[in-house]
Image 1: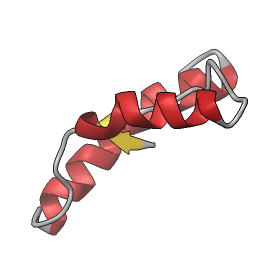
Image 2: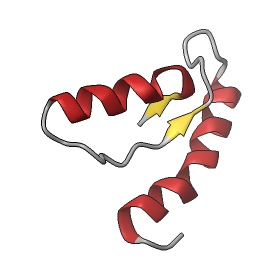
Image 3: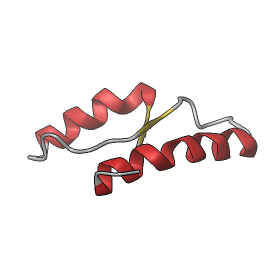
Length: 58
């Protein structure tokens, strides 16, 4: 899990640590300074992509 601003960095770090192809779900950046409703909205939108990466189906 990463925000969109850090998705590429997360992939790069994973590859450097020997985990190329790590499955990453990105949520809209930024989280800091975002109100609770905005964070919950981002989380809700991340559920299906996360399930798809973990199980192959949403």
